[in-house]
Amino acid sequence: MKRLIAGLALSCAAAVAYAQEPSATVVRFDDVQQQTPSMATLTPEMWMYMQEMQRHDNPQVAVRRKAEERAQ
Image (cartoon, rainbow, N blue to C red; front, side, top):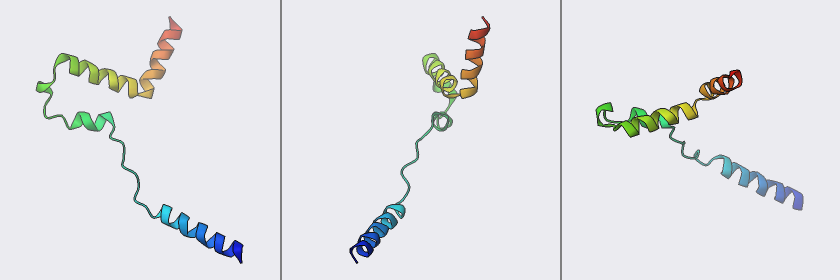
């Protein structure tokens, strides 16, 4: 009988945890970049920073850079 009650309590707790709303999604840098009002308002430093972040986040570029370093 104790196992039945413990199992039901565990099942109810799992059902409540499963029914919760999903956690907030992480905003990617690509989404933030598209929300900028215009490219004319960006300073050169901001533009360079955004380009570096895109290059840093892109795994294809990372593989390409690693291959170029090995080739040299």
